[in-house]
Length: 177
Image 1 (cartoon, rainbow, N blue to C red):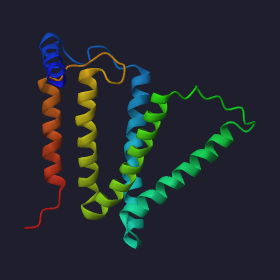
Image 2 (tube, rainbow, N blue to C red):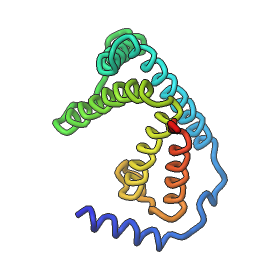
Image 3 (tube, one colour):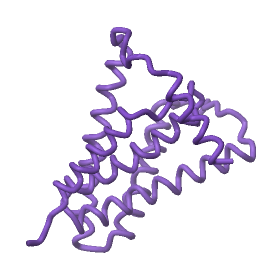
């Protein structure tokens, strides 16, 4: 099944050989890029904080405590947004609950893994590896339209971007001579 999907994605790549970014960038796209940059800075900051805290403890307990603290702040934020208690949430079906739990588990892995990685290798290398993993998964999600958007082909330009990122990771990882 996956093989068929990959073949379709690569075939679509050959069909859609139009130049990227033909239309001028709109204001919403610029806001999205600025937001993504800020999120990237916050991810790096969180990793640095986690590494510092895990020096006194271990990465697993540090990650879990940071995740609980984030959850408590989220509850406080919700209380400030909806002070009357009239918070409307869509009905929670079985699949939605599973997806929410998987998202929570992913968050625990992200926070705990970041604290561990930042403490073991340089923050620059850890962030680059995290971004590489995100880019790899994002290309797969784009190819199959997993986020509900139109599928985007994996072409040579995108593969070259991944290879450049892999090269930068090699340069950023501390080498012991």
